[in-house]
Amino acid sequence: MWLLLVPLVAKLFEAADRAVKLRILGADVRLALHLPFRLVMFYSAALAFSAGAVVFAVFCPSAIKRYKSYAEFERTGIGDDILLNTFCGLYQKPALLWPLPFEDSLRDFFLDKYTDFHGDKGLMVRGSSDRSEGILSARILPDRRPAAFWFVWHNVDRTRPLHRLAAALLFAIGFACLAVVLYQNAQTVWRLS
Image (tube, rainbow, N blue to C red; front, side):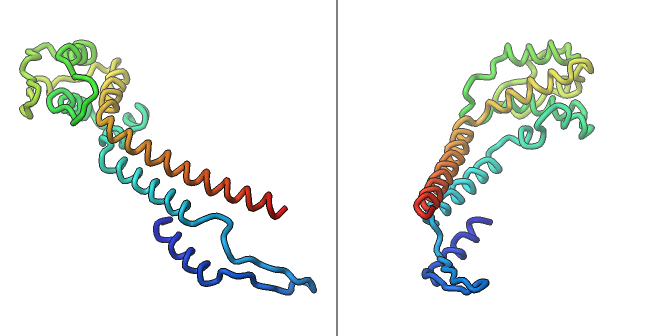
């Protein structure tokens, strides 16, 4: 919204960059029709926030965008399939620029601790899209479902560190530009008071 609104407001104020004298209740009031801050900084903030939001929307893993908590996941009524599929995707096809290797020991830990799987764990091969039907037909143990959710969620959250850094930097730039705008406004108010 701000990407469209700021240039329009700038054009309006550029055309009316002078003081207007009004008579209100018998007193002459001078109304300045210019903004005390530079719209360039405000527009830069809008650009940075928009770019950060685009990076988040495009590169954030869907499991992170969809479920902010286990309670939210539980409310959807989705079964264990989504957790097992997400886990298999993490193990078999790790995301680009994965910060830490997803080792076989982590796979074994998940399957032993959170599921009723007792088959051959070696059937799930890294780099392959062929998922073992035995693993996908396993069930998450009911009493360990919240812990299994957080295990998968936190491991998904570790993916794509460069994209996370880019989004964080863009939002920080946006906040810095807004801080400059607030500072400029404070200076104007201080000068006029």
